[in-house]
Image 1 (cartoon, chains in turn red, brown):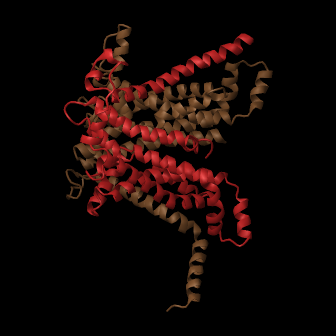
Image 2: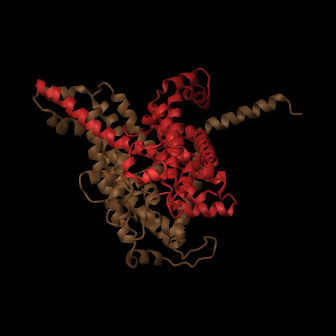
Image 3: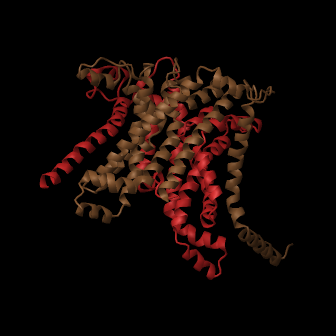
Length: 272
Length: 306
């Protein structure tokens, strides 16, 4: 019995070490390579000992001019998240309070459907209305991901929130919407943070929409990164520096708001 | 000038109206958005799938009825291989991710010193941009300068082609997907494990059950609904995997279409060849497949919960 008590922690430590190495080493490799000259990258002898250089980052922000793309990603991510919160949170509240099951099925369908199947019509409609390549078209497209996500998270959140406070607010003379606005929403900060943070991360990482709908002026970071390899020979150092430039902000962001990210990713998995 | 009283009345009338019809007023904008972005476009896609639209969507196209479907199902050499690859890709990554995800979740179940750092590390692959993840692995799996072959050479294993080898590309992509998404399963199952009460576990211990018996007879049955949910959420995404495949293999899943899944094929027909009619037919078929699989899983989930 006692040998078993010692054996399990050792087994667990060994297994978890393997997991951590598997998850972390690729990232370390990416970061290391981003500080290597292209000569050092191709030389197996310089796996760990090399002269660090910032040339690759100079390429990313100089020649490839990533800053505007970063701003595009920020603008589109923030705008689609804010608008989705504004229209999605009240909707999820009435859906939770009045058990509108059909609407929640609609939310699930929006999550299931392959977005490629909507891109041709969107592309057509945006081209007809002169919105093709504008921020508006990209924000609308990104909202198609963020709105169902926000409703999905907030629906679970509102269902768990006790209804008593809202009811006592109505007894004190508040209208139902007033009770939602003054009471429920004030208590919903964790839910709103979870929904907003996750929605922003998904928008930041989105590749397919901007691949079709963006123009040179509205291009987002993942497309700028993808364009790095469309040339004949790949600048590996620059590519890795560009990958770090995209991944680092979102990883730091997620680490700061770790609790909310976990809550959002596991939302709806416990019930529903 | 309007006297203040009627203004207040209008405002209160507006508020009365909003409160009376709050279901429609509050859910209205979101419903309108989803209708415009989902239902109408989907109808348009179904219509396009029955036409010969190509090149430009605004050009008049012949109505072909079900000819596109017939061509894809019976006369197309890319559709069925793509279906097969999608099925293989999805079933392999789901199996491995569920097993590994459950294993890691069980290891993290009971708190110990330092487990919070582990839960942070587990988040990293999940939030990392998939295109960047694809690029990262493309360098690691590079046939001549990649670290993967360098490590193999330490064990005197000959260099592999990985992503650039038509036979190894899809398995390598499966590996990348497993690497990125196993933590997702772990997080969901960990949340499920943490909500299991101690009583049945203690009762089983008192009855003399060992750890393995407790896992099979107590933990897994209690966890079943969460397992099905994790499977459903991962299946939805795995069936549609696009970013890492397109980023590493490019158009059409490589020169031999070796990594061409249904989503890649549909994208390729839509935007690389601009065969809008044919692409739409592929998409409708893809949608039917994906909805069928998800419906089965949703029904399974409902049964587990009763």
